[in-house]
Picture (cartoon, rainbow, N blue to C red):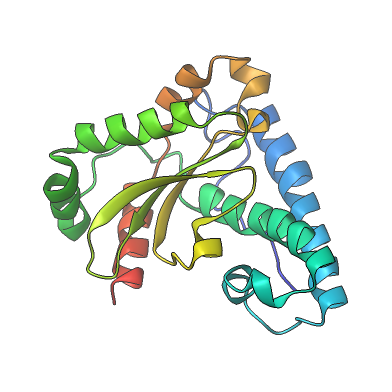
Length: 203
């Protein structure tokens, strides 16, 4: 059975950047529902025992009537696990080590990374995600997906950081001001966690 990532911080720990009410609604309602629905669909499809990554990277193997629901709910499950996992009240410090070196090589600077990922998130029309991901050679790139699609749907397994730009991620606090939410997001990204993930996908 797939389970939500267990938060290692309290729901109010990301204040004032991400408020407790948004965290409660986002994690305990939206994410919980995606997870519940995904588990039910996986059982219905006879896919119990397979990883979420394996399921979502092989949607064409599923019956037509299950592809959309599994893509949407499986993506909602997996995307949110990545999103919540990389946040922390100790976030905001600059990346270090191999990840920092790679950021400088591929984006010119950390500011360059923030600028490009912010632009991608702002350019996502409607609901969706902006992603920082790594290629097999370790180089970094930014991509976006709509709704609850995930780069894993296209076989891109090196996702490192997810920026949720669905309105439910920010509307209770920031209303329609997506730029303000994105600016606040950078204050709670835990780059130690992202660096650990980078090492994992490049091992």
